[in-house]
Image (cartoon, rainbow, N blue to C red; front, side, top):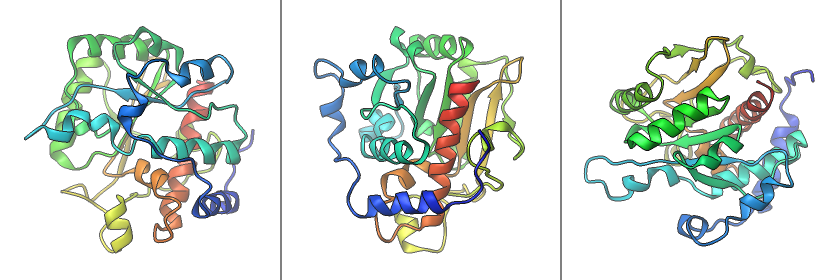
Amino acid sequence: MSPIRSHPLVLASVGLLCLGLGPPAVSPAAQVGRGADPAAASERRHEFVFTRAIYSSGGPGRGWRGRSWATDYPKADRQFIALIQRLVGFDIAETERAIRLDDPELRRHPFLYAVEVGYMSLTDAEVRGLRDYLLAGGFLVVDDFWGSVEWRNFEREIRRVLPEYPIVDLPLDHPVFHTYYEIDEIVQVPGIGNALRGGRTWERDGRVPAVRGILDEAGRLMVLIHWNTDLGDAWEWAEHPGYPLRYSSWAYEMGANQILYAMSH
C-alpha cells in the first residue's frame, strides 16, 4: 500500500460529519459496567475494535479527574471509527470498547488509546497488566495532555511500566508517519475552545507539540506519545462548522496511520 499525500478524501469525509452523519453520543456510564459489552461480540466479527484504556487517576481536588480516561468518550471514538471506515475501508467494528488495564482480555486488542494521562495514577495491577500487554506486542497511543506538570506525572507512571526503555523523540521519517498517509509535519491540534476562538493553540505551558515514543529492542514502537496536542477533540468536533479542517484532517490522518501501524507491526 503506497502512502497517500493528498487530503481531498479526508476533507470530504469530515464534511459528511458536518451534515450530521456521525454516530450519536451516549454517556460513559451507559457504556461501561452495564451487563454485556457490545464490543465483545464485534471482536468476533471484525478485524479491528477501537479500544480505549480505563485507568486509575486522580489530581488536585479529584472530582471528574477520577474518570479522566473518559474525556471525549464515546463521541470522539465513534466519530473516528465512522470516518476511518470511509477513508481506509478497514474492517473495523462500529462499536468502541473501553477496557481496564488489568483485564486479561486486553491482549486481544493490538491498539489501545489513552487520554489525559497527565492525571494517570496506576495501581500495581494496572502497571503489570499494561507492561505485559506492551511486551507481548500491544501498541499504546496517548493523547491530550499538556505542559510540564502533566508530562512529569505521565513520565513517572510510564517508567513504572517500562523502566528499562527510554522515551525518544520520533523523527518524521519514522514509519508511523507514512503507514497510509504521508505526514511531514507535527501539527499542534488545539482543544475545542482554543480552536473556535482562534489565536493560541496551546494550553498551560505546552507551547510546542511533540510526538515521542518508546521502542522495544527490535525497534517496534510500543508507546506513541502525543504531547501538547489533542487529537481526540479534533475527532469529536470535526462536524462543528467552526472547527478548522486543518486540525481535524491532520488528526484523522494520524489516527489512520496509528491503527495501520498497530496492525502491521
